[in-house]
Image (cartoon, rainbow, N blue to C red; front, side, top):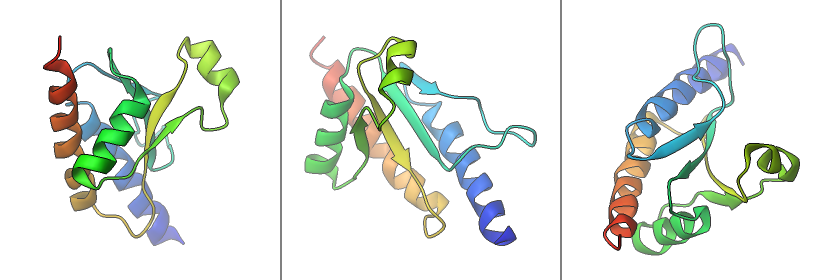
Length: 117
């Protein structure tokens, strides 16, 4: 169990760091650190792109599955002032390479939607 916890912590930090490189992204929650532990998932929004559009485009164009919506956290979304968010979740069977496979299509998706501005 300790090995899984260490892996999850490393994946959480890697996912957060990689997501932070995406233009106009807002990641909800604190950056993982030695003192701040968080699950290996990130909820986020990208400015002017609905989370469901992101999730649908990633799925249909890139075969990448993420969640979008309320995530059973409507009061939190209301407090954050957003109607929904996207969420990438990892588990002990995921790797840093899986994160990379997600980030490149996410960047492509953001570029696609931003091309209409």
